[in-house]
Amino acid sequence: MPMRGELPPVTARPYPRIATRSSAIERAVWRTFAVLSNRDLHAVAAFCAIGILLTLNVILRFPDFGAQVATLAMFP
Image 1 (cartoon, helix red, strand yellow):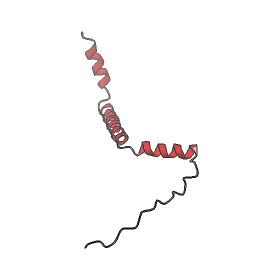
Image 2 (cartoon, one colour):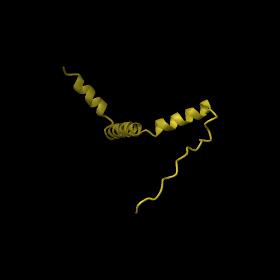
Image 3 (cartoon, rainbow, N blue to C red):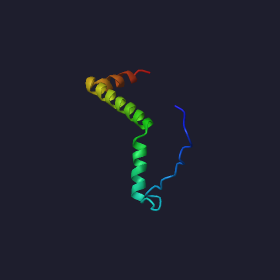
Image 4 (cartoon, rainbow, N blue to C red):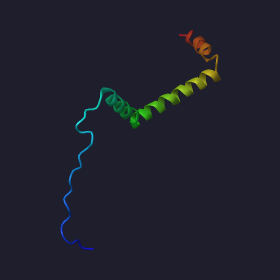
């Protein structure tokens, strides 16, 4: 459908908090939220959690594994 006439100009709406400055606590909260919502942090945290769970699984499954490694280390 063809347009008739011109579009009305878009006027910028003033942001209600432009005149006020944010407090240090508010900036700290937003920065913390930005860090915690980062996808790279989620990937690293998941990788570390999987590693810790696997390590605990091996430790609990083979409680004498450390002694076996110590006996192997006695031979040069």
